[in-house]
Image (cartoon, rainbow, N blue to C red; front, side):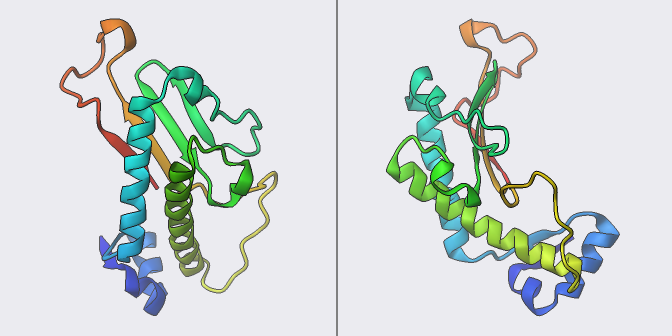
Length: 168
């Protein structure tokens, strides 16, 4: 099921009922600023994945497990960049342009996530989450490519190496 973004604030009960009944809701007609910020962040991620060398990418890795953000390239066929709106200066960015685009997108999606959560809670307070230094994770960029060294065993050889998927 789907509903327009504006209905999330004007009719949060509808969102809650759709989610309860179907376990998912697709929000349509998102604000233009949100979709544009996501497109800009996806383009910045694609450039990072395709143009940066391994050491530049590894410099964007965060080793503090409480932050859970930054670059992850530990799988042979997938690279991943995890952006957290609330990480602030602790979020590693490969460039100022990437950081600006990623911050805008993750912030916009975090705001939508909070509206969804408010609709579900129906005025109740969210219980405290242990060991949760940051808010919701809202923006992930994935780049799937064939295994390095030409070994495509187990990979779909028709996969376009330029594909970047965002998980929200």
